[in-house]
Image (cartoon, rainbow, N blue to C red; front, side):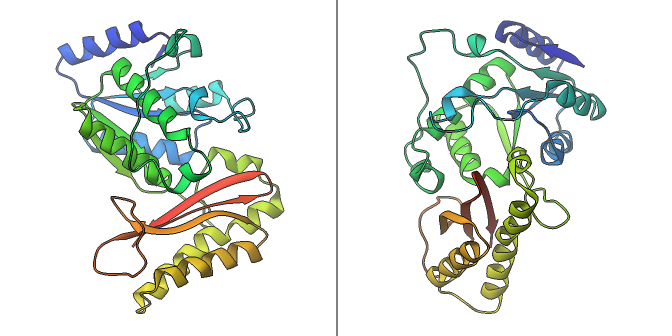
Length: 280
């Protein structure tokens, strides 16, 4: 497994593999890898990637000044060991100066899907995501990119970016990986106290209960969302948002029809912000 630190070296590595006729898959991460990330590696292999590149880069421009960039968990040796076990071909782990040689004055902005949900309280977040992923694509030169459904809005924003900017990349969205008790895997779960972690189980449970209610004929999605908010609050959480939206366009939906919808939510337990979602 190769460890690559510079954009130029990464491009040269990928071009050499492409000349050999090999297909490259990219799994972009911010490190502190867990089973959710590892499932994305498996998804890349299952979708035809001959070579898998995992990128590890905590992206400063997707964090607001009051967010957890400095304290975001990092453990490169742990990440390298997991990637070696999964037989990853290369880790691309650039430094901030290599990704953003000063002064940076060019950014990538998606103007529809990135405006609701998480963007209501994190208005600059998705410009940071689209910019860094575009730069990672240009460094790794992949044929295939894999992202997780847990970050549902991010996945849809990036799918639109790939389409609109004509990236020659096939994107796959991989299912949410959960703990045995239902909590969605997240690098931020380590911030939770035992009590907060127990309380946070209300997120996955309330989504499943909402799915069951819809299966039993409930069509009032405003009622569904309000009930989820009440359950989160009763469990000691602080609601950021609970919304019912079209599963692809992320537009608000108030009455369930035959079209797929997504229930997306974000909530704080203590100081930790968690997200989850379910497509129905």
